[in-house]
Image (cartoon, rainbow, N blue to C red; front, side, top):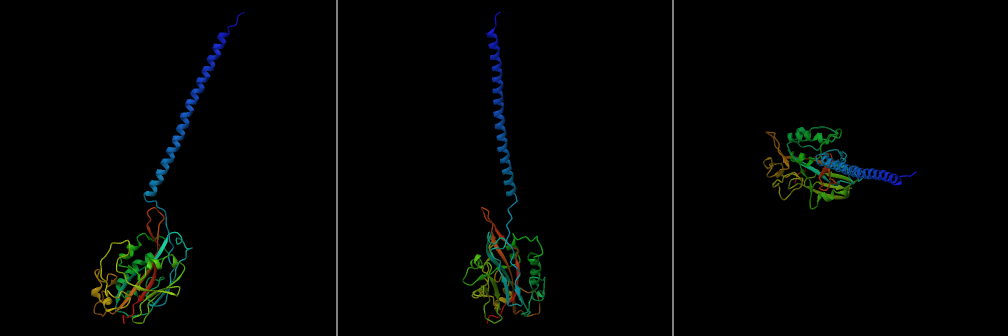
Length: 306
């Protein structure tokens, strides 16, 4: 009996060929599948990154916070004492650059050295001194009220400038450098002596004294305003006749002074209202100015010029 070996061999070869083709098809199908999964993963990551970028660039910004300055102690119109925050307080070790003090002068017909207003009250009797002082204090109270949590600070400088509050300066010194990180944790006093001719000053840690002077330009970040304060040779916080003259209380001359709307009275007195806040910079590639909630310092009476 003969055996057809060629047929059997041919049949086995055919089966092996078919198996090889199946394996090749599996490999050919598996490789594109892996590539498609990898491509899908890359596409997913790119879309996710792009979506996150869009969210951040469309208003979902990082939150930067600097804690407010605690309320100080003020007993009358001559002295206020504040303990400045330390580097361990929120935002002071990362964003803080300097403290900023806003002020505005008000003309009055009322002489007093008693406490006019305090950070913990809405009003004592500031309405009797000047109606603008009363309205400004009431308007700014919502920003200084520490019991609220929805205070907006991004527009702080504009908010004060809209009330014609300017930024305090020092005679012969850069106030931003003096009240920078080196001042953190120190005791700060603002002293308005009742003695005529004695210039008001700021004192740090009871040793370093700086003479207070009025501004000659608008605060940083608001449109510039050209004005020529009087008396131009003496920008100290003293009650000069040119300062309490209501005719000079204009945006072209004494832009930092509020006139008085009372009639049939003699204006011979001036007071200054002050607020303090912390300023800083965000950590973005293009840093933004950031501010703490402002704190009301108090209202001081200006002594006579001589």
